[in-house]
Figure (cartoon, rainbow, N blue to C red):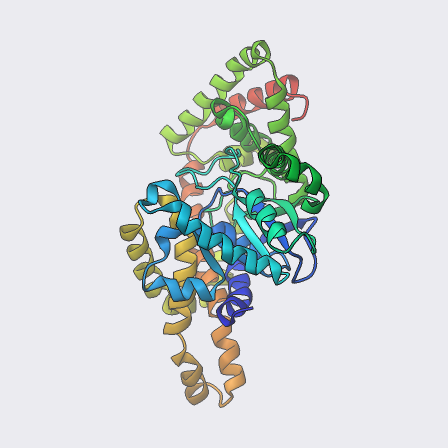
Amino acid sequence: MRPLYAILFVVQKYALLLFYPRTKTVNSPKGFLGRTIYVSNHCASFMDPLVVASYNSPILFFMTRSDVFTPISRPILWAAHSLPIYRQHDGLNTKNENEKAFATCIKVLKGGRNLLVFGEGFTDDVFVRRLKPIKKGAVRIGFITLEAINWKEKVYLAAVGCNYSDPNEMRSDVLVSTSDKICLNDYKEQFEANPNKVINELTKRIESLMQEQITHVEDKNWLNFHENVMKLTRKGMNAKHSDTKIPLIERWKYSKHLANWLNEQKEEQLENLQGLKDEMERYFSLLRKLKVNENYVHELSVDGKINRTKELAYLFILFPFALLGFAHCSIPYFIVKRFVEKTFKRRVFWASVKLILGMIFMGLINIPFIFLFYNFVFPSYWLGFLYYALIGVLGLAAYMWWINFVRFKEKGVIGKMDLSKIVSKRKELLDKIHVQIPVA
């Protein structure tokens, strides 16, 4: 394990805990070694390797797109276990370059370590709950390694699913699910007889296993329908409209079951759902037009009124900690935010890059406070370091204070509006959902 990887393994867990407070792993592999190629979906850019590495035990080497390896970033990426993979549109002789990359992968696997490959090859600009077709590279690497070591050691494949309520939404959820392993040595005879056939079959199998680890809506036209049902029932993995009292694993299963049910519907059955689909879209379009949060409509439908007591309590309790958080974190936050949003044109990169750069920049800029604490508060470097380590929590307090301040203001406006017709429409939609969708 390289030093930077070891440091990041500890530090990024802390940062991710602040970003994703509700996390869960399913069938998480044990042990640091394993000679396994983990093939993951790739729905959240740089956030995916952070999440998979942080919430699982195995030491991983990451296959990373070659264009991010610049003279400045290359030594950092090397130290963090990243290996370049070349794509056709990178403008290089990809075959020769990837042969070098595969040689490094063989070396990694021969040493008993593990690879993480993002089978889809790229991330969509907008987060969607579906899997794109899987490429054959991971399976090829496995068999090339076995040939290089004369099939003397076992090499495995496993599918990994990264499930986010929303990867870009702070204080949302993440669940990482891993399939059982496939031992490639079991396919030796078939591979030697017809390698292309075995590679194709195993790629299809790993794709199927990956779909089982995530929410996969086959038809893109029904992605919004799936999301809107989760928003209204509050049982699934929507980041802003879920009942977090329901265990995360149960919400993950609900999201998957709903998607699987949709995928099983015939054309005529989907036509029968079209009316409900259109009604939900009109409902959420109206909320956007009126600038009304669906959470407040839900609160009105359940309690009959809007209550601001919870937000007011948070504002008072968090205030002293939020002041310290603003003092320590606001300047680096806005600098990182401005830099990332100007540098990265695709929004899909923003959350992960902000998390990494924010963690580094805030960590560096606040180091002097260890010594300031020692000299002006209490002469103990241990307590000074403890205070330094809690600066991230103070930053979170500032964030939560601001969120509750916004909610307090919004609820004040909502409380003066007559939303009785919208509440009735919401109830009507829920009744139709429960009648037309058995799994809801």
